Length: 255
Length: 282
Image 1 (cartoon, rainbow over the protein chains, first blue to last red):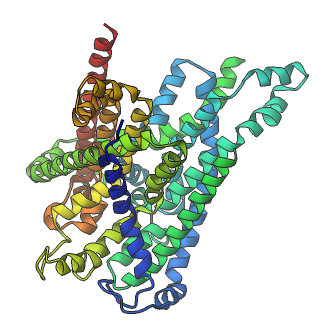
Image 2 (cartoon, rainbow over the protein chains, first blue to last red; image 1 turned 180 degrees about the vertical axis):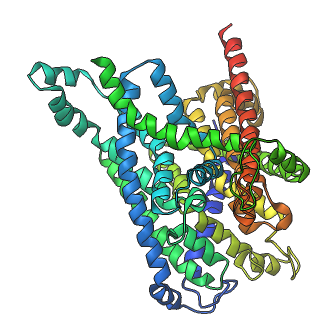
């Protein structure tokens, strides 16, 4: 039966809509014109300006540091949570499951606002620690979901087999469960890492002086005069995103 | 023994989420009933003054604007995502993976950068404005930025993947031979699509609509950078109260209102699902 061309056309149009703004950013990062309305010649000058912008590199360093620490924490908490949720079915786990899934539907602004209120009420000074706590809180749920997905395919008789062969529960966990779950745990950790780097809204609420992350820095630059420099920075960030996505795509394919 | 192991496994994440998710969320709601002190902190005792101040401040137009923008965003997203999910579910395995990747990748790009991309496109000297002037579609002094239309456009841009992915998940499970059957029985392609495919993926439609609507309700960055002063959403008011004039109880009361606004559609959806589930069982 002949298929309609309309859905294909909509798909094509939407993908063009998705990529056109990003393509314009990349193009304009090499454009000598300040606003990018027209092409005024090729230039590297925005990238040179970016290289000299110390505040951007400081922000990148802070962002990566927070992302590393919070994704490792979320990986640990999320894996334990997934194991508990998968293994036990009790009233405690219903509460646990609710607490872990609710942040997935909670809008960022509400999470940011409630953490701000919480830290102010406790008199905690806003800074690295508060950002770390906030990032772990919103990424634990994602890690748990990814690991839980893995556990559903996991054959638990393997653990019994290990025990029958004389392994202690701890050895069985360490030598059988963890290696088999590792791809899931790492995938969850990578997701947490990406979410942490990307987050603007929650970080905005709980950051203090001296803890400007990269998204916060870009947002404050948007109000200033150095707009073409953001084009250059964005191009680098888009390139790294695409590279990571391609890598993940290849890795998944090999499996 | 088993109980001890359960507790050991559960305790870290449970304690963390209780302390940093449940308690803060409860705190926001309770702070709506606390007075604010002069320095913008939390005052002593309990009172209804904050709630009164929120009601008297006249947020109704902003609430209306927030709901209206989110609802229109959800409708546009569904209208675009429906044919797209239909298409992606029907192409070959290789194409499907590629298309899904192409949907997800721009979505992985930093949120602020995507907003910046639109801000520079819509800028009076930006590429889109220049292009439209060249085509004679808008006048020289057209202002594409700082209006509700621009906010809507960028809202759709950022929320569309939230509609495409659940709809695709539903379309993937749909039996496309039913469409052929409808065609054989004389339905036009359009009619087959509306009468067979759309009802077949209604659960996906429901969760996509809910997802987009609820996510859009909490937005404030897009109106802040893309919209004008009259296009603010509830989220903007929350940040202004929290940071602009440092009145945390007032901001918390607004946040509690927002929480309520997103809980209502979610509860309605749950109710609908329950009623609907019964109907399917009988």
